[in-house]
Length: 383
Figure 1 (cartoon, rainbow, N blue to C red):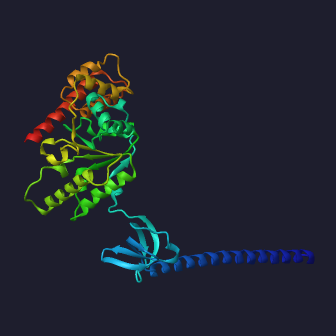
Figure 2 (cartoon, rainbow, N blue to C red):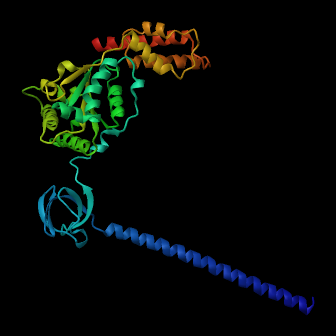
Figure 3 (cartoon, rainbow, N blue to C red):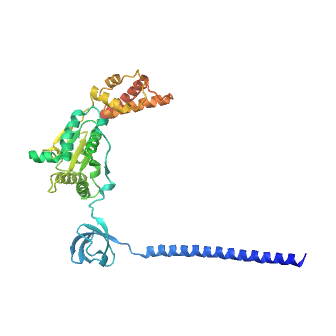
């Protein structure tokens, strides 16, 4: 091997070692950076564990640069941090430091109860076209709920106050919830849906706070319709003696009546109650000035059943031989929900035969099945 060749090999080896050393330095530097970041993250996490948690309180009154706050243990006269001076008012919910109880931050406006976790708050999209067989009830709801919200000046001109709410009563499945959502859609109002039993809380006094907060929120988000399903669970006839649970239900009911009659005007807030048991309701809730408009939602007649069938079959592929009039006649005594069930079951019978076009046999089988289920419900109810 010549001297030039040996020199070239040596130079290549030195270059390789230099590159290898440089690469190792880069790897070590990157590893060092990652370790520093991990150390910083761990130190930050440890600092979080060392920090004292803040308490949440309610501002009762602002006194110059100090505040009276309310905690579960009572009221306290405390300092306000410089950053928060002039930014707080009564009924604000604030963060306070544990040791000195100094107000250091604002959370928002105080709520008596976190009602939005327990109720359905929405803007429904149910048009009157989706409802069949309830023309009379539709007209009444438009007069009592829709007209006062859309044209309040008419009532001012004539010098009368529109009703505060209505009671929808009748058998289940006849469209009480649906018609309430339709009137909310037509007025572009917010829709608060509550089940009556949810108003009754576990601890004494919480139910009344819950009711108060619902009406407070409804006023803030008006125009608003409060729909209380199964209202009989809180508004049934009162008894002189009862358990502590029954007395709590009565307290909640009294708060509900107070909110309807209260000093604060309901304004653009309307109440719709719904029940299957009008006979057990306390007379106080349906007296004039409260839910005084009683609207019965009956099972649909033949014309109504035909309308409901047309609504639910408009997007279905039906054979020409199918007579919806005949199906409507044979579905006597069925509710709107049961008629919808007839249509759905007929679709399943077609799918089982691997067909996408429904025939008369599908509807006949469906009617038999739904009627059997309905008869079983009646037998269980009276057993």
